[in-house]
Length: 247
Image (tube, rainbow, N blue to C red):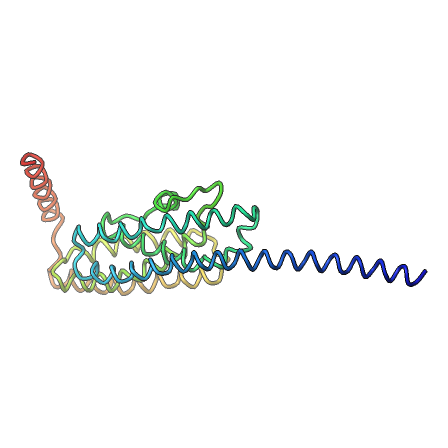
């Protein structure tokens, strides 16, 4: 009788371990597929980092356009990532750690590029649309978005210094207002993620650095007045209208 019981236990144990082996092999396979895709995302992120060097020096329309084209190439690997996750429904957060770093970096780069162009912060949904993500199947994790925004703010102090050196004395005012609003918005969040909370603290120091440049430019009398800014905007509109008439 004892041998029969022992035999049954051995069969059960062997069956259970075989099931585990199958699950582990599937998990390893999925991780390898994800790693291949994240390498493509990382490669694009590196190219975008290089384009930021040009943005820091001269945020010209052609430089911004080149950066946006690179952003567009992220759609393909992200769609591949979504396809991989379809093979393991309900396990988004089981594998989330395998791509979250690359996603946070991509969010940061996109937010910075768009801020240079528009002066505004892209919303969570706008980034999903830009990346071609379907929130019902494979969306952008909220914390990845918030951490990406925090990373983006760290680009602003150096950008402001570079723009002032290039003669753009209104840039500190734009960055100062943006970071002030961003910092106040983050303060409303009850952050429980230690990493995110530390990155939020970084916004405060970015704001301090931008504030120093803002006040320095203002004290030296280099910052254009609101009236000057209005005239510049009107001149820009007239130039654009003239170009439209010529075309």
